[in-house]
Length: 483
Image (cartoon, rainbow, N blue to C red; front, side, top):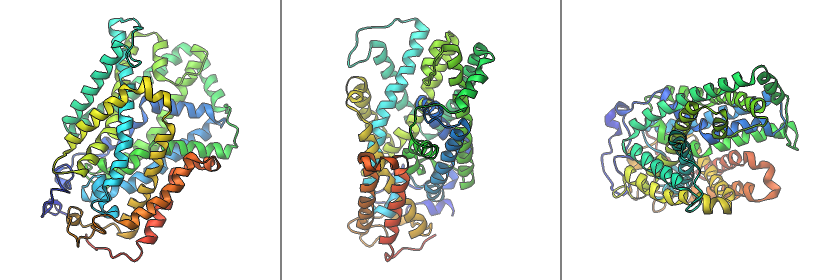
């Protein structure tokens, strides 16, 4: 396909703006390294490190089995994002536009907003966590003591740090996707450098005791009451769930890649390869804390504070800030910006959607310490995540099994009543029925104790059920055959 094939001939302002328009191959600048760093910033965040370290300590499995489960999860996620990213590479369209084929040109607003709500919520929360790294940096540089006076649970330094992060993220987003890519390309490798330095520092202090501590962890410890098989499944499911939000809208990033081969290579190196190496580093650092500090620490910020090195604290705080901002932009800022733009393209650009996201998320993050974290958010977030599962299955099955990997770009931006993706007043009711049935199951894995054993794989099962139901219901639907 030439660049001219990506030009929309008839502009419908209710469905089109420059941010949603197909990106022709000539304007795509990303290669495998940019995709690798999307995942690097995802894995190498503060929460990603804590998760990786905790998996070795919690389930009582041999360390090699834990590592195998983590790598397997990386391969599963790689397959899933290769599937969801391929149509966006081929047609240059973001996730909410791709959703129009399966859900209808108006119905696509539903999956876009569900994904957007999840992202905005976590954007606010991650902004707060990034601000804690800035607060650590400011305290280290200027020797500011603890301040007992708080407002909404945060000190003056905490609020200053929070404002700094909020402004920095919006400013970075406003510079455009190329600037974001350069930031990710810097932040991802820097986290590796800091973690390696931290590991070497702890190894130096631990001496010969480090390898013994690693051996003890690898021998399998923990209070998990299930069998080795259920522990292995739980680890795989947990790691897949960690990436669930990015899996569905990966097309928002793959549309910038030069070709599918670059996307696949970036996913291979960035997922199973990157996860395995980073998890091993997390294991060695955690083992070092056992020898040096007498306890297993899984919070990297707490580890850095205890190492008692001003230089390392400053560098690590800056790097953890960069990594957390990186994943926030990837998973929680860019997606709702596109999703909001899809609601009213003539009035909301991606940048306007980003501003709306930042404003709403500001209040979520500001209320995190004093209110939201106190009332419990797990059920709310897990429920929204369960809603995403059938949507993924429906969108991917529609593209590969119903449409045989063929879309009509022009029709994706057409509200003509006879259009290929208009369905019933712009909504594909069959897809909505398939979603509703599958969502009942995936949500039940969150709330019904009888299905709690499936919680780890509830997302995958919900996606498969949505796909099966959608293909069955679309069996007799006429499909436009295009290139």
